[in-house]
Image (cartoon, rainbow, N blue to C red; front, side, top):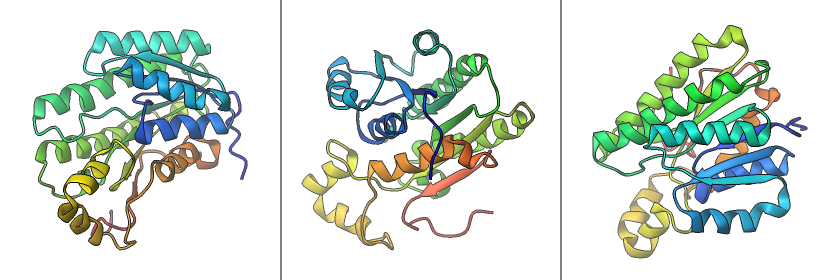
Length: 247
């Protein structure tokens, strides 16, 4: 299936590793032009070195908890790419138990990113924003702050999807389940807390954890015009690990 993303101008936050890196790679493989950011210059340099051969990629250090830095990131990306068509909000405070930390990164950072980006959507048709949530937003966990702000992420995107539908701008949330990659939370659990890791693994009906590429495939498809009637959605990509039905 052709996704017709050739030349699209894409901004992906948190693109230096894991899910973000896979999303960057996915867009590059479709011929999109990508700007991305991360908190560490060294990890960004390594990522760009690995992916540069796939297409046009630009990188910048940015702390998503700093609103001024986020606005500067968007201005830089829009100038570098000549505008924006697609924005992926991927940065998260991850397993922070502190509600304030989660708010600064996941909620205020995401909001600032979106508010700064949408004025650069010169041609509304086909422009869209995708936020990376988590299945934790649809289930109770031992990390109440993380679960709360991931639930808020899905709700926020639903509301924006309704508000901007007539303008032709789509807003969606992709909520991964447990994703395994080197340097990630679950790789650490596998190596250092095998009993916990195996217990979580046993709860997934597929008998395994997901890969960053499996999340990226969904994001890239959702960003394309092949998903043009999908807006305000929260797509769980978790191997059926979340109990119940979304209504």
